[in-house]
Amino acid sequence: MENLRQSYRTDYTTFNFSLPFELLFKKVGPKLLEEVPEATLKAAVDHACRETLVPEILEIPEYQGRTIETVKSSEDSFQKMKVQLIALGLIVKGDKKRTVSDKNVYWKLTPFGETQTMKMIAMRKGVEN
Image (cartoon, rainbow, N blue to C red; front, side, top):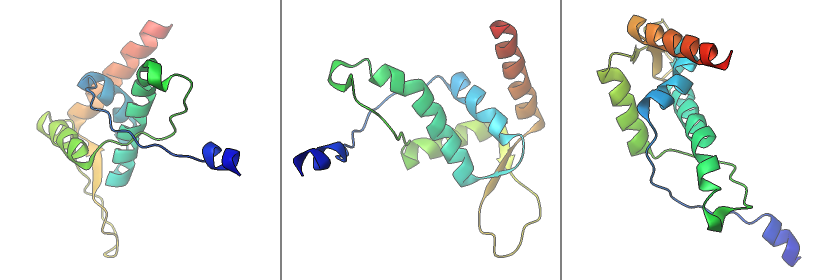
């Protein structure tokens, strides 16, 4: 029974980190080409953080050989990032008509945000080829 408990053991660790804003937007921008609920935006941010930070975390000696399955940004960090995207003119609240029962907040790229996203994607593809 001891081995079973160890194999299902979960540790939660908080890391403070900074992620270059351009890198974050490069990964999140394409998800916002259509209006998405705020939960989808948050999931995209968390995925971008996981994709970028897990390899760095696994280089720390005490975390080598471990598996990191979930990375979540704090609510405070997410709200600050969202304000930054709005302040830079990259996103706005969605304006599509929805049912009265739909209480979600939706987000989409501004025309400027779309242009920036396309430039980043085109630059990245150009570098890869």
